[in-house]
Image 1 (cartoon, rainbow, N blue to C red):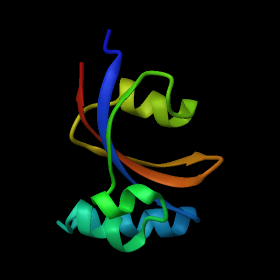
Image 2 (cartoon, one colour):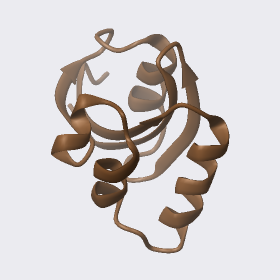
Image 3 (cartoon, rainbow, N blue to C red):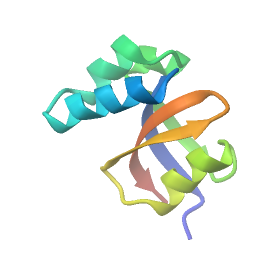
Image 4 (tube, rainbow, N blue to C red):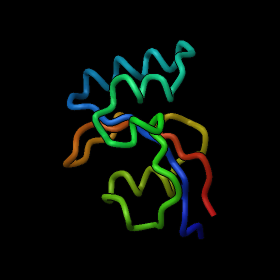
Length: 93
């Protein structure tokens, strides 16, 4: 079972915002550029890159996506106490 992962995300305030961004991604928009433009997480400066983190470091709904859903797919919108996330897991180990 993987204990570490690397992911990137876009964090916005509303589900509608997240849905609109996800539509742009499905049409081929660049994840990193959209993260930099729309995400209010400090990771936006790094194009949404959260780097490597351990299982349990993130809030449970976020952790569940990162450690259970397929890699290299944008998942969400996922609601947490911080807002609405679009999440892509880059790797797990």
